Length: 99
Image (cartoon, rainbow, N blue to C red; front, top):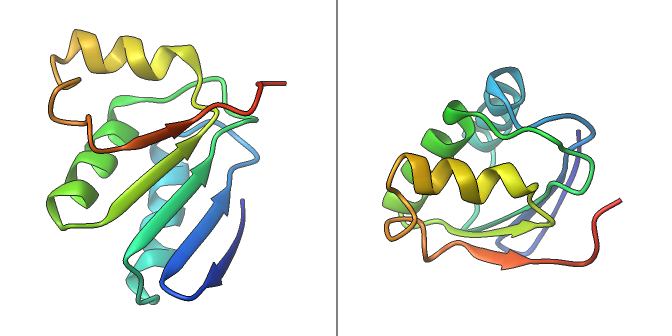
């Protein structure tokens, strides 16, 4: 995982799947940083698990603006299965072409 901060935005590029251990690393990082916007690049992620969805949902509820770059197809499927697509509609999705 790589990250940097610019102004009130934290940019995170994942080098692995967006699953529980990765969520914990992100939470630890965010606990020590002050920010309003979160950008997560998922270009190299193949899996998004329910813990990642829970993390995103909680962050939205806290008023954090979230952008996901190149989320894997499974992300949308999980939201539909959990019937959260309407609740997560404020997450901006940017598709730049997946690897």
